Length: 354
Ligand SMILES: [Ca+2]
Ligand SMILES: [Ca+2]
Ligand SMILES: [Ca+2]
Ligand SMILES: [Ca+2]
Image (tube, rainbow, N blue to C red; front, side, top):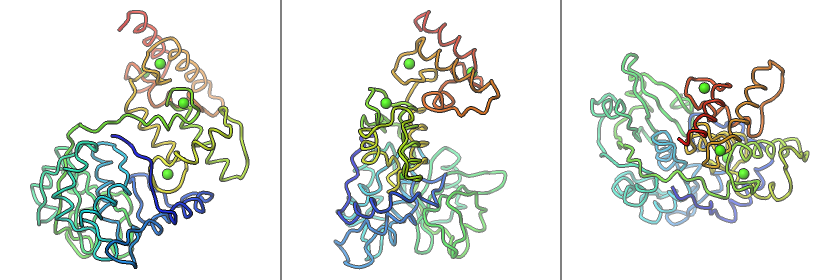
């Protein structure tokens, strides 16, 4: 995926700056986009209406698509880019009906399919209990669903329990769902959560998962857990209004994080961004290459050993910096734990040139 800099309106920039000192209180773990986040009040498109034209009111079709893609293949989609395109082609009309599902799903693959790595298998009028839906979910596909006045995403089916994994971008008492939950079929067939239409999406593997170089916040040429740790440090700095010097934090790094550190584009730079970047790092780097320099060598073994020494000492030492990333990608021999055997195996592999 080619990531772009998040271009937003002047009003949004002001809002984002103003919002920066307060951490998002409702950051949800299982979803990428939270429509209720304050930022979306200020992201507006006035092409179809001058009023009620912000994504906070009508962005559910866009957010649910992005949440579905994230669940499908881990790609962090820029919701603004999708919205901007959809406004242009008449598939998203803020203030004038929201997302128009037919033009949206007729065209979205052509525009974003390659870079986001998905295929639209089809759009259907039907229920969530349709065999077609269940089979699709069991095969690893996801769906964007239409319920009365709202879109959500469905990303899994549990056959034993007959429950569906539903991603709700805008929790609301009228529907009663959390951001991320397993919901029984009956609920998804009644009232405000009754599914009556859906689009099925499957993964194509074409998405480019290269991490943009701008996320090398400390400028050492590598994007690894030192950079994710710096996001966390910056979050603490802002939260406590205190400057820290951990992990080489300096003004250049602060500037880089303040301008590019909103990994999930939700308008807030916080530890969720750090954890999303770490997930991304662990997906694109080989196990064992803990400093992420695309080489497996003694340096990685040393870092793994250091981590193991700290983790097994029982001391209340916080594992930070690169060492924190070892937890994510240090299990070289894939036995479920990071220990001295991984360090040995890394050295072995290095020595044998494999
Ligand atoms: Ca770096
Ligand atoms: Ca963020
Ligand atoms: Ca390495
Ligand atoms: Ca291991």
